[in-house]
Amino acid sequence: MATTHLLYLHGFRSSPLSTKARLVQQRMAQQHPHVTLWCPQLPPSPRQAMDEVMRGIASWPRAQMAVMGSSLGGYYATWIAEQTDCRAVLLNPAVHAARDLATQVGVHPSWHEPQETFEFKAGYVDELRELAVPAITRPERYYALIAQGDEVLDWREMSAHYPGAPGRILEGSDHAISEFALYLDEVLGFLDLAP
Image 1 (cartoon, rainbow, N blue to C red):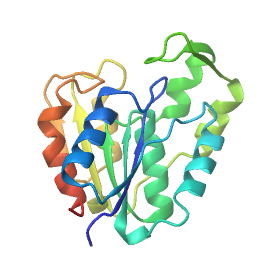
Image 2 (cartoon, rainbow, N blue to C red):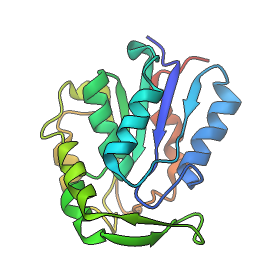
Image 3 (tube, rainbow, N blue to C red):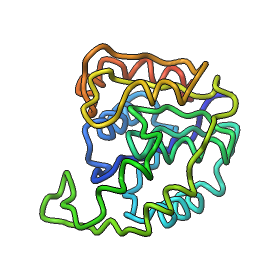
Image 4 (cartoon, helix red, strand yellow):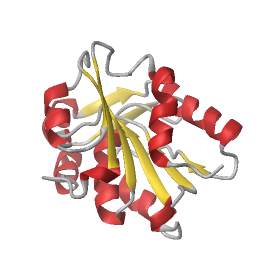
């Protein structure tokens, strides 16, 4: 069944203004104008973020929705896919977010709006732990785009977390997947988007 609703989730310190998010937004507007695309600005609290997202997609048809997430957004996307049984595209997904972000407690500037700051509280690490997916079910509904050159996350951990899932492991590249535009057709093709 074709995807009619797509959720895009950005990573830690990121926003809907990220290069990857903007590429997806542009392509959807050009080639899939009838697909509902939602790319929310996520609050720092993981629990609040997922509460807001689940409320936002409550009326979406589960069989025709999909989620795409980058980094921390990929961690969230995995949790959402397991909750809703929808398809998911993961872009350098965080798989041990509580462990990795435990060192980030404090105040941070937003990546795309440096004048804006947010606080990542110690309690948010526990909230991340609550959203952990120890093992995915139905790997065929996941597509993982993973860069061996990711300077933030270990590509081996990412790859091991999605056994049997289709996708691509890039030699080199980086955490941002700077050449994402080259793989956009492949990524969106997996989602079987409605025209």
